[in-house]
Image 1 (cartoon, protein in one colour):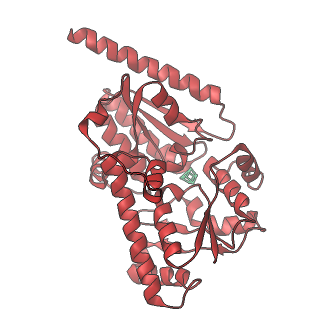
Image 2 (image 1 turned 90 degrees about the vertical axis):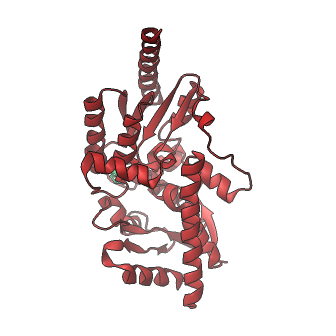
Image 3 (image 1 turned 45 degrees about the vertical axis):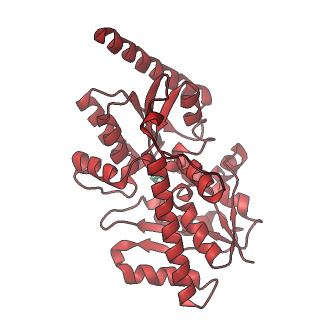
Length: 335
Ligand code: SF4
């Protein structure tokens, strides 16, 4: 059986159930890299220039960890998944960059995804990818339909049950059942409700963000994330803030930020990577909106290779402390 390696980094969090379904339907075995470790990060960082963004360094570390584990590595070049909305340049050149910096990598299975070129080109790209496994176009078609359905189920599971991508992946690919989202689930927190916004590869990689979600939950907070919102909620927030999205995945920053700031929850934390051009622009839109509304506290955290755990903890504690004091004051005024 052909073994396909998938790095647990970058777009893994958005598309893993879809990719896994596609390859399994075509009879391949999927090998997923382990969660990020310091060794992975250091090995990945050693292959690229210093000012490469942290998520790409992490990605290279995951590819290196898969080198002897699989026959091919799947690395798509995702240019655009929405008309006239463009992806960060790092995603466009990901297969070529990986070939250049990790020459010992197994052959790379890549696919160009660019919806601006039309459906016909997209379908041709999918068939070209499927031909590594079968010459039967109907089998590739069935695999792509099953994969798309898995993706829709994944999105729906996250928004309807308030799950993060790692939780939803576990529920979908494991066997446990999930409880439907109820209003009471929002009121179980003892301290407050905090939203974290940013790309999934920053929010859910516990090694690089120093277990941010866990720390917030341990402090008694309910944590909300972009995936818990519906596409309509995200799009409507983007329309209000910037008119139309320019960057792919803008909904994870501007859409979620705009929505949660208007929801008047306890606070919003924006997570971004040092040296990331798109994020610095998008996070600035959210920061300005927070200042304009002046109703919901906002803090941005920038992650890089050398970000110390103590630094993240100190900023987090100071932010939470400010939110709790604000909440107490509001209660006193009401009394
Ligand atoms: S969007 Fe930013 S963090 Fe993500 S890959 Fe591009 S430069 Fe890196």
